[in-house]
Image (cartoon, rainbow, N blue to C red; front, side, top):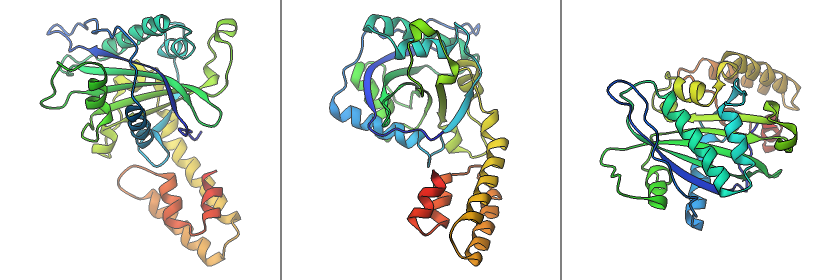
Length: 284
């Protein structure tokens, strides 16, 4: 699905500290955030921009499959946070999420980091969402800052490039207390800065699989095949000249042979289709 990040709003934000593992590779309880942060309007705007840059259709964000939905899964914890009626309930569930990240980081050499957890609503349908953002310390970062300053330095500034995002969006609104967790009511997306730095590098397994409980299996070969087949079908049925169709099909083959390992659907459309109506129809 296309992730609609228009008119995104923020309801709750908390920051936890994920500590480095001990020399014995034992995980440590996080430094828990004790309160909900209140963001100024400028921070909300910056947050929306960074999130859109990372997860929108023309970025390196990708949709993933949810494979873990048991009662102790991160999806279950995230759903409770989305539906939390009090700040206290949200904070308690957010602590469990931070512990899951600490446990998932099996390597003792992973540096300490911050976990930002954000809930709110997004898109025209005002769907609930939950963003889990692991922001890694840059050289020279100081631990003395608190609250909004952490959020600004760790995620909202252009200088910060080392971060990962897990994003759950509730596509069908329902009463979770009466109906229980419904995995099919949620979609999941990830962003990993490593996918930008080296095109042949996959997102961190501990983050998207062990922590988030998702899998990228449907986001590689099967989606590439679907991209090719549906693009061919669209080009052949589009109201354009035959010679243009031939050129577009060749451009598609060139796109699939590119060496950077990434297919950007919006980029392909804008680089090859001339008519805006054709572009919009293709993206739809």
